[in-house]
Structure formats: C-alpha cells, structure tokens
Length: 184
Image (spheres, rainbow, N blue to C red):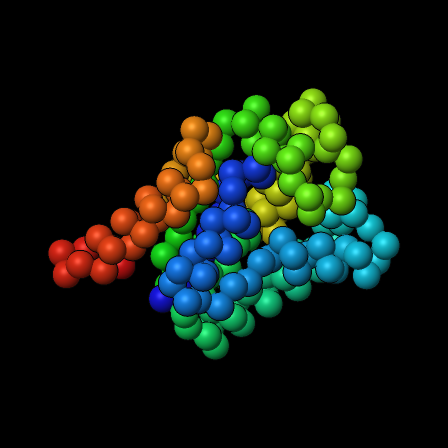
C-alpha cells in the first residue's frame, strides 16, 4: 500500500501520518522534514527556503525526485507532502483540509516549527504566506495547485476532529477502497 497525505498547514498531516504508519505497519516519510533539512543545511528557515524556491527550482525538484524514487522503488509506506499525488500516481491520495483559523491555532501549539508562531495571528500570517508560496512554486514548476481537492481520493475537513477521528475516517476509507467493487 502506498499512501500519500497532503493538506493545509495545521490540518494534522504529520500526526495522522505517524499514527497511520504505526497502525498499518508502514514505513514513514515526510517531504516537509526532507525540505527542512535542506533548508537547515543552508542556514535557512523553511519559510526562507520556500521563498528561494520561487526563484530556484532545486528547492522543490530535489525533494520531488526523492519522493518519486520512493514511489518507484518501494511499497508499504506513507509519505506526507504537497505533491505526493503527482509524483506517486499509483498511491491512495488523501488530503486533510482545515479552517484557516483552526490551522493557525494548531500551529501555535506545535513544538517542531522553526518560525515564530507564538501567537495565532502570526501563525495565520505565516500559514497564508506558506500556502501562497506553495501555489506559486507548484504552478510555475508543474502547472498544478496542490490544494485543489480534485487530485485526491479522499478529502477530510479536520477542523472539528481530533487525530483519532481523522485516523478512523482514513482507515474506514482504506477498508472500502480494498473492496472488489472499488477500483483504485
């Protein structure tokens, strides 16, 4: 099983991917973590790296090739990132949506962000900048909008759900996805 998980900032992608990887015994990958490491090696925050990516395509192309190779050479994994649906086309594609306010609120509670998101207002501002940068970059390099829900097999609005509820929805979908009447 190949699962690609995308979504808006603060939608719960990382936590849900971690739980699903454990429950389904899947290898776990994160494009965001890969890109954060690329940024860190250059002494940049992810926001700065994304801005650079609007001019320099290597910031995305390297990470995209990395995930494409995973999709070609491995099975039984889950990967979270914005473009998994494109680079791993034979995956089951899941998108986690979230209301912008709720996404920002969740971002203020995360412990792994390098940007200053101590206030909900700052988190909302950074979130809006990130989404806009993602859209500009992926439009420029691939002519896609990774937030367009038509790319996904399952879309879940996580705004009023906890991680356990989201995981249960995904697991229910995966069970029905494997039934004979449904073709992947």
